Length: 296
Image (cartoon, rainbow, N blue to C red):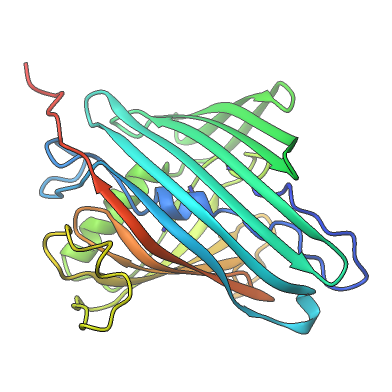
């Protein structure tokens, strides 16, 4: 899904227990990965029908080991996607969590806005991270694909130029996933840059796509998802690896699971960070009217 897809390094508990830095890390990319262009637009991959929309998710702690030090997580995530392959794609994202440990309770608030051009060659991002309503960090910059590589020009927290391997940005990453799912592929590997953390690395993503399925009558998200057509979805799991620190077949930094619809909407999120995991349940979905900005 959406890495979201964004800097999640602002939450840092100085504790004798486990390091629980970055509990929210890369959730936006996950969500950004799970949405895409509007239904009327012509996308990079022909045949994909995608919806502009605003999705609201309630967040809760699923599991936590004793080593994590986390006793509770609750919050809300709001994701809004708009744009077209002609004018480009915009994402506005907010991720608010209350995270409790034995020692402290902190309110974290991440606000991210991104723009990706229709060809997936330029990606602009700005993320402001707050802890207990105080600005903790701001990351702002632009990344571009050219000459077989990715090039990042950071403006904040400081002016910096970074060279990275060629990769995909979030919307193109999502379009690729939908194309693979629609063609019946069940496993593939690709890469992603979404501006998260210090905006200085490309992540390798290993993606598993299950068979199409439908919901039963006991599905708690059905009321929020009742406007979705068609009703079937693919169960998807994505593991994220940092190639700078990956050794052999090491464990991923985190995993995301979700139900993916053909129009790019996602629900029933599970975010697994190893020592703890959290869920995101869709509680409200607004699908916007599509405008074909590519005509004329």
